[in-house]
Length: 444
Image 1: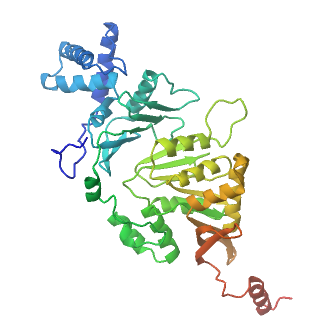
Image 2 (image 1 turned 135 degrees about the horizontal axis):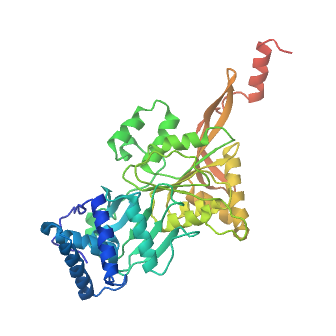
């Protein structure tokens, strides 16, 4: 329920960083407890008396070891949380305004009363990997070998998801989603803007960009096409498909656009091999094969993508390239409201969309073309086409087109609105230009 005593704009709690000395202390106390056959409360044991008894036993061990008296209670709580709960994150679970907890490579952030806050690096990544393994063991699951991800409900009903190395390439990634601890009234929802009309658009203004530095960067871009694409990334106003032939600069463009993604938002990157160089401070990065030989244990990219977009709440998902079954999961993610960016092979905008459909249909032919095409139009917003153009004896990689997908026409084809074309329809036909150029050079 709501807590009237809280301020209108509450701030997340300040969590003390666990130092290397704290982690060593946890290990030493754990060894003493094992020697004395003192077991922490069961992970699902919510009996306050048993938890208090364990806290007192930990406190006694610390006193015996000559712990500074002013730190005994603080350190006893750290050890108790580490061995019987979700460690340092227990403090956040006790706050009713915390809606989601994010951990990425030791860095912790929260979604707190509707806003995203970074709390900094609270412990070494190894601490959170051990924590994830501990939670998995307590929940009767495994987080080892060919299953480097776990999905578990905590005793209080919170939803715990973790991905660990080697699947995660940027340290341990943890999400804890809480439910129903604050029930808002309609009056409060009105005050906070729930029912205020705010339309979404793929043709917005610089003022749509919240971060001042990013807004200035976008404003400083001299060319309209790249300014538009940067705005799209900075505001997460739409999902983007970057198409083009091999070597046309698709990945280069995706890497560059990643530098404009909102800094105060979690981002996930998935690839079949590490190629993207994503410029973002709060990143979940996973690398997994597109497919596995029959009978081979392990996880595939589409399996990981399914877990990430349904359980780990990224504001944006970047898929290095869709080449197989992950195409369908990519479309599913966009149709659930996630903003997603990826690259795909295709010589034109239409060819790229056709390839995306074919890859999705190859995974689930029972869906049929009409259903897949509907998924494309519902989830995907913009296509940017890159191309290789010969210029002065060298190949230039240039943007050829930007198109907005506006639905399906009466013939069942995509309705595309081109915002930009390197060659406009008003120009002469390419063959006529080529003929004139050859004639002017005096060639036969």
